[in-house]
Image (cartoon, rainbow, N blue to C red; front, side, top):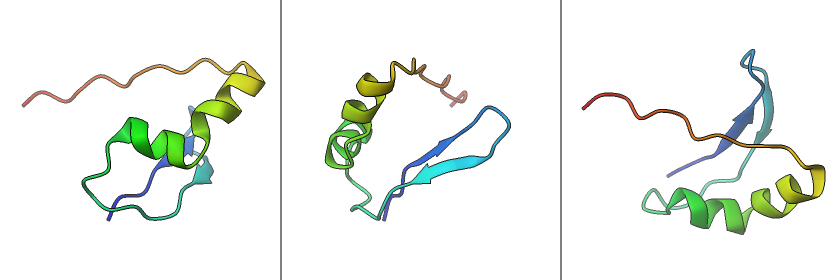
Length: 54
């Protein structure tokens, strides 16, 4: 199971998705839940979090 969360810089949860299968790619989930469409409407800029060292 995989759940997506959008949080403010201080960690406040702004939105949480419903559950999707764990193998669902992040971009696919963003499309399913309409995150990209809503982000484009608001003009909010997004950044990719750095990957943790492996």
